[in-house]
Image (cartoon, rainbow, N blue to C red; front, side):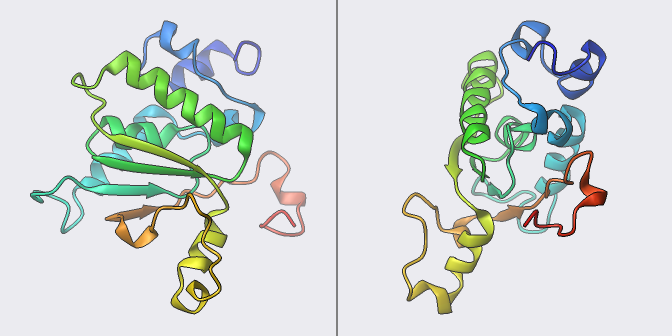
Length: 176
C-alpha cells in the first residue's frame, strides 16, 4: 500500500485499526478512492442493525454487500454485528484483496474479540446475479454456481462505486 496514499489518508480510512494492521491491508488505486472509511462504515452498520425486524431479533442478521470493493463496509458488517456477511466484488483482483483484508482484520480482532461474522467473498457481477435471481430468469439457469441466494439475506447493501476521478467525462454510468 506504500505510495498509493498519503499517511493522513491511510489514518482517515483505517482509523479504527493500528498501523501494523493497516500496513498489511491490500488496496489498489480504485480502492483508494472507493473504500468506505472505517468510521462511516461502522456508522452504516449500526444504522442498519437498527432497522425494523433486525433490532432485537432473536436470530443474528445477515447481509449481502453487493459492491464490496476491498472491504470497508464488509469488514465492518462482520466486526460490528452481522453474523453472516457475503461480499460481492466484480473485479477479480479486488475480490482477492477483499479475502486477504478480511483475513488480516479477522486475525487482528480474533474470533471472540470482535470479529464474529462469517464472511464469504463472491467474485461476480451483482447485477447479473440480481437478474438471475428474478423468477423469470431462474428458468434460464443463469445464477453463478458460487452465488448465494440473495433472498436469504436480511439486508441487501448497495454502495455503488462513484466512478473515480474521471467519472464526469464518462458517457455511461455503467462504464460501458
